[in-house]
Length: 182
Image (cartoon, rainbow, N blue to C red; front, side):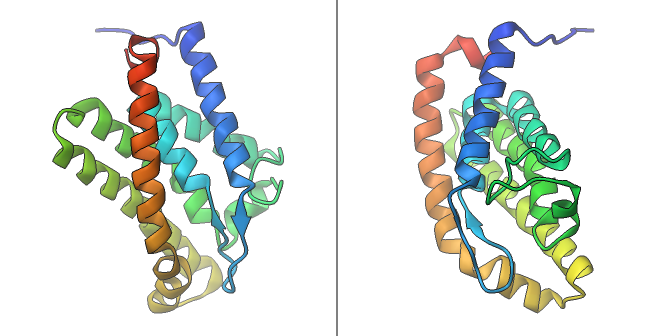
């Protein structure tokens, strides 16, 4: 059985991507139903494309854990477990899964654009599904209300963010080559 250890290089690139996620989370536009429009999903996608499935998932998981223990890395320089039991909790919880799925698309299908795009869409859908489910449960909301608050206003920007993060991420991944992609 092959044992996969993280190198110092891996740890540094994971930490760097985690920092980028925390920084991009601060670009936030409040929305009427309590779910802000942030650049977190851009940064999660970027980390996944640059690092791949496992390291991208770890980067997103570290970000989520830092926010859960109270470090001010979440949108609005906030942090704490209470944010995981609020209207955005499902989105936060879904970030490691989103990153892993998108990263898997790069790992397995980078030469087959259709496969990568399907993983990009699947990762984004996981983010929306978990976010909407938790919104419904925690806010005692109908699915229609949750989709109206958490999905519909974000679709145009989600497409733009996913496309830009993919283009930029693939360029960075290509430049870094074997350093982060092994």
